[in-house]
Amino acid sequence: MRDQLLTFGRFLGLNARWLAGGVLLTFASSVGQTFFIASFAGDIRADYGLSHGGFGMVYMLATLASAATLVSIGRVLDSVAVYKVAAVSIVCLAGAAFLMATAHTIPLLLLSIYFLRLFGQGMMTHTAMVAMGKWFVAERGRAVSVTTAGHQLGEGILPIVLVSLLVMADWRTAWLLAGLILILAVLPLSFLSLAKPRTPSTQDLAITESGRQWTRSEVLKDAPFWAVCTGVLAPSFIGTSVFFHQVHLSELKIWSSGVVAASFAVMAITSVIVGLITGQLIDRFTARRLLPFFLFPLTIGCAFLSVAQQSYSMALFMFLLGSSYGVSGAVFGAIWPEVYGTRHLGAIRAVVSAAMVFASALGPGLTGWLIDIGVGFETQLLIMSGYCMATMLVLFRVSKQLQLRLTSVVQAT
Image (tube, rainbow, N blue to C red; front, side):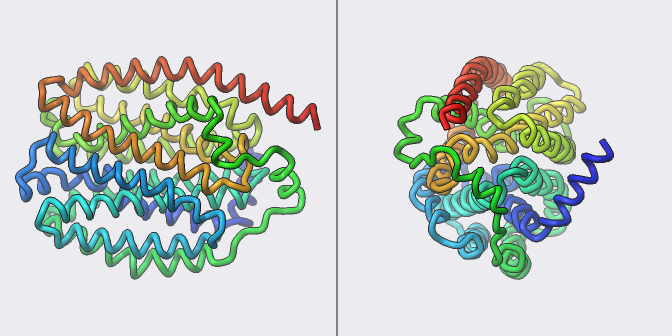
């Protein structure tokens, strides 16, 4: 254990600037993530006269449009420097925050959410993960797990900050502050940390190019890719649905408004710890071997949250959700370059990122509509649990298939 900690410490020290840049991007992506936007759901619905289903539909349409756009623009990372893509994404995300603060019509609300989702959840995360996938090879699992921690940092800190801020200021002021922070702090820091790309070692480059380098068109014809994507959808759909309906869930369970906000810290801490452990395991056992296991905690968590009533049950659910997030964040950051190579990673991962955005779009819209027609959110959680169980069983077979495929490639060479 001591040797592993020392090795990890050396890894952090040698790669601090690039890892810090990745964490900065994933943390800043919070401005376009569902948990952040949903913190203002009650105020937004009141200002615009929207029901749960109505706001969910606006959110779904905006996010679906962002997913479709991401497929096209995500490939830019295969030809444009990471720091340039990051800078444009940050400026556009800040503009979206300013638009959210000043919009007063539903079309402008939809447009602001579209840009928040495209450049927040979409491009900021996509840029960070493609950079780590290309810049690291032998220690890719560690790099991805550290970078993913930025998401958990945002989810752990910002909900509590927002609860405090909204006591002192209105919700539109909060969005103005978010935009200013992106321009004045995140933009210059991203340039300092990402302007100089990390150059993998000669050994790393040999590993990177030793296998088949799949094009995006080839990947889209590969059945295991779509099977893995069914797993990608689950955490995005479920996490987004729970975050989006956090106010409604509190009303169902008769919890105070602080219960859900406080539980985000549990999820964040768990995700970081589990993610870092998973990163070490990926570097030792490969991402494809760990693939099926990330849905197990989520299967239990959805079933538990459906029936539990005590306030502590939200923290337990967030612990299980955080465990799934920790494993999936590291695995899905590493598995694509591991299985399909790095030469076309930007284009390939753009499809994956779009699938995740699509799932996060479908969640609020579908679950909100079901709530409006009388299908309770607790019943929906049971259905989500069943989906996770079925998908997990499929992924065990896919994991074995990918392992056999890559083993045969190694033997052939």
